[in-house]
Image 1 (cartoon, rainbow, N blue to C red):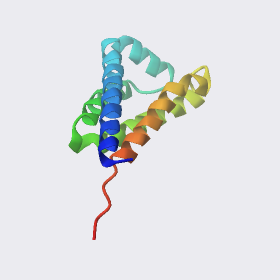
Image 2: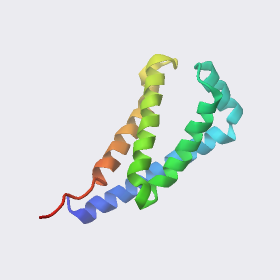
Image 3: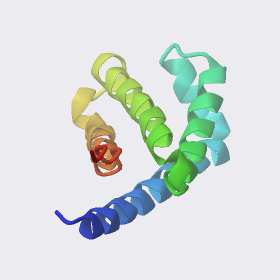
Amino acid sequence: MTSSARNIAAWVLQGLLGLAFIASGAKKFTDLSGTLTMFSSLGLPAILAYLIAGGEVLGGIGLLVPRFTRPAALGLAVIMIGALVMHATKIPGGLANGVPALVLLVLLGIVLWLRRPAPASA
């Protein structure tokens, strides 16, 4: 893959993921009572709902800012791993309902791979 094609693919993926995470975090904030109820039903503290929603919004924005792309993708990957663990252990329906989180995790991994630092030239 040429560097130009890799750059285009990365930007398209970053844009789509950025919008998805911003929308997801914003939805958690707009339905805050529902989000807090869901988190408490899973035995999670309320502060975690705020941290996850804020992390999704800020991470989504970070995916769109070149300097913050890799840290944002790493942070969002941690959130998606947590979502997968919750689906596997506490959320009814199990991992079958966690497929979107798994897809997002894989796509974040692809962004990290596409945006890996260039090898040093001698």
